[in-house]
Each structure stands twice: as C-alpha cells, then as structure tokens.
Length: 278
Length: 302
Image (cartoon, rainbow over all chains, first blue to last red; front, side, top):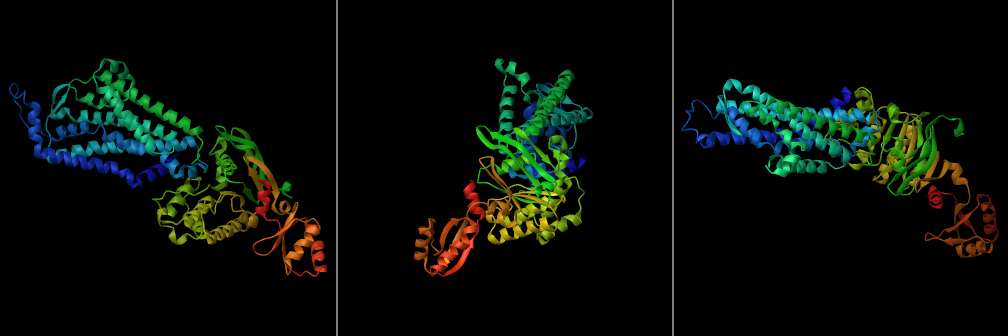
C-alpha cells in the first residue's frame, strides 16, 4: 500500500500540470497584493467611510491579514477548478491514456490502487490550500505588515491582531475540507468516465450552479440549500464572525466529511467492479 | 502430447456481452506450459475481450478462468505477478523516461526497483541506449519494444501478447518475431500470442486457436491443423494450357493465376500421381508448391 501511495504521489508531482495551480495562485496573489499596495487605501476608505464619523480608526488597517481575507474571498471559483483539474484526471486521465490497464494487469488490488490515488488527491489539495494561505499571509506581512483585521461578513467586524491567527488556521482547515468535498466529487466522476474533461466540467458546473442556490436568498432555495454541498464549503468564513457559531461550524465539518466519505465510497465501490475497456 | 503438460491457462465456457453484442460466447480453451499459442480471429471476434477477462480488466458474465491451476478471482490477484502482458498498443507515462516507467511497473509487480534487471530487459529489447529518454520521444516501434520490456520486467512465467507487432514496418515485425522466439526458446516463457498477422502465427506458434463471433472455431497443433483436408497446390509448367486441359479432364478444378502458376486444391497424397500424369503427357513441371497456409486455413474457418 505504501509503495502504491509513493508511486501515485511521484506520478502526480512529476507532472508539470500539477504545478499550474500553484503558479496560478502565486501570480494572482502577487497581482492582487501589488494592486492593493497601490490602491488599497482608497478601497479601505470606501469600506469604512460611514463609520469614520462614529469611530476613531487607529493603526495599520491595510495589513497582510486584511489582504489575505480579501484574497480568500476571491478564490472561490479558481480553487475548485484547480483541485478538480487534478482529482478529475486521477482515474479518467489514466483510463484515457491507457496506463490504467498497464497498472491493473499487475498484482495490484483495485481497492488499494484507488485508495492510493485518493491519498495523492488529499495531499495535493492540502498542499494547494496551504500554499494559498501561507503565500498570501507571508507576502501580505512582507508588503503591508501586521495589524488588526477589519472584515465585512454580514456585519463589519474588527478583530485585534492577537485574535486573528487562529481564525486563519481554522479557515485553512475548513477551506481544506471544502476543497476536499469538491475534489471527492471530481474523483467520483473520474471513476465513471474515460475522459478527464467530463469530470472537471461537470464538477465546475455543479459548484457554480449550487453556489448560486446557496447564495441567492430566494424562498424556494431555502428548502434546497441544506442539501447542496456548496452551502458547507464556504464555512471557513464562519470564523470571521465576531462570535463564532460553533454549532454551525461543527455541523458543517461533519456534513463535509460525510460528503467526502460518500463520494469516495461510491468511487471505490464502482471502480472495483468497472470493466476497463480503454 | 499437450495432455501431459501443465496447463497455464484454462478457460471454461467464458461469456461476455456488452448490451446486445455477444463479445465472447462460451469460449473454452487451454494454453500449456512452454507453448506459443497463436490466438487468431477476424477483427471484432472477441480476442481482446477474452484476453482482458484473463487479466481481470473485464468481468465475465459467466464461465471460469484458471491460471496456473488456480481458479481466478479478485481475491487471488497476486497470481498476476506470474503473468506479463501487452494489450494492444502499449501505453506509458510519456513524461517519464523508459527506465522510470519500467521501475514503476516493476514496483507495482511487487518487486524491488532492481536497476540491473531493468537494464537487462532494456538490453534484450534493444532500448538500452534510450533508457533515460522520455517515452514521448519514442517511435511506434520503440514503444512496442518497451511494451514487451514491461511485460518481461518482473520475469513472469506466462506472457500474453495482444497484437505485439501492431503498426510496425516489416523490419519491426521480424524483430518482434525473433524476440518472441528467443523469449520462448531461451527464457522458457509460455506465450499466448494474439495477432492478425497470420504469417507470424504460422511461423512461430506450435498451437493455435481460432475464434469467430466470440466462439471457438478450432484449437490444436498448428502442423496437424494445416495438414488436415486439401492443400493448395501451385504448379509451374512449360505448357499451362495443355496442363489445365489435362487436369480438368480428371475433374480437377484449376486456374492460372497472374504470375503464371496453375492453382488448385487437392489431397496431399494425390500430388505425385498428378505430377506423373503431367510428365507422362510431355509437360515439364519446373516447380511444385503444395502447402496449406494459415491464411487459407483461417479464411476457410472464419
């Protein structure tokens, strides 16, 4: 099993395509941070213009934390795309290339193979979410320094500098869980097809469609909302409420983990019986 | 003769359908230790489906497969470590080198990454000098040879080769044929060889199996099968017109082909009498070719 995991990791990280995601994230972070360096103060002024008459703002509000929060909010389309690019290709890509049959004619159990592939997906998702967090925080600190965090999340919340880091760590954990739900869905679809384009497109279509349902405040959608996974993948932002709703946070984590288990479980069961015709 | 030998592959009433299409229909046959078993059939006959079922890539609807005397099921997938296979066009991780691909496949076969073994196999298939080149830079012929390398890398006892000379030029076909013969004769590997190049099967197989529409048409020793029934006779004479008239007077249906040879089918034992007849009628016979080719046999049977 360990050998299989090592081989799958090696295959994933020997592929140039696996680094496109890291490069894309880095480029976006650099562009956004440089833009904020030039125009960030006017954006922040717009943010707090109504409060200036009531409150006295002191210190460095345009800081690395503020920029990281803005970046995390803007990545909701890109990150699912990047993780489904790898997870959607994991099985279907090999089936399409014909390398899957080269593996399966070896004394390898199908269940172990798909679990090894899943581990490679988990490692990739973990690293790419960590890279997003770490690089935006580090570059933000470097360019803008630290300070209190001011965010708008339902209401305008201001967190002291000492109260910020744990929120980002929790946001990272929940961001990872959310992206794992997306990756598991792409992985499941990948087990069903022989072409990696299909799983990637279907995953993205579902993410975008469900996100609309999750975010549009219509009465009809209120009934559907608890049943779509996108309602839970944005749970990382719960940690930027002044008082964290822990019950909702725990509920979200459990539902996300359940989604991951169900998607991956179906993928394993189906792959175990699948006829390899390519 | 084969009855005394150990059976490496035994298929019993194997069937598989895809929707309405019956790809393999109650197929039964055996491959014995030391054989080069030719596996023939027209396109779509079910050869690849049968091979994929033997290698657990496709689940049979019914029937059974025994490998090395053990009934095959998913729980004993370890048995695949005794089999090397090349299925249709070989596929590799194109962004990795030939060496790296073989190393991965060797590890997947449950063996340690043995550099000596990898170089040995690359040497055998003539790819030693390109061992560090990425597979995407390889020609079709080189990929085909790398395909045989990967089938051999874990030193299996049985090789299942599905169209190993597919897409190769005549030189490539000969090179693969010689390689297969060496693997069988010098390394003692048993080989199930599926090919649509009938001449290749005829030249290197000791046993053969023909299937059509998923069903077995015939199975047996190549020499015995080819000696059954009429043989195709080609005659070169100095007087074709007179010879044809004479043969027809003896109720032998014959015709002269575009190369000027008289062609007809006849039982092998009557050929000397026919030659005598021609010679006694002052017709000189320069050349007699009396052989049943596999191609003739194949066309008769399918």
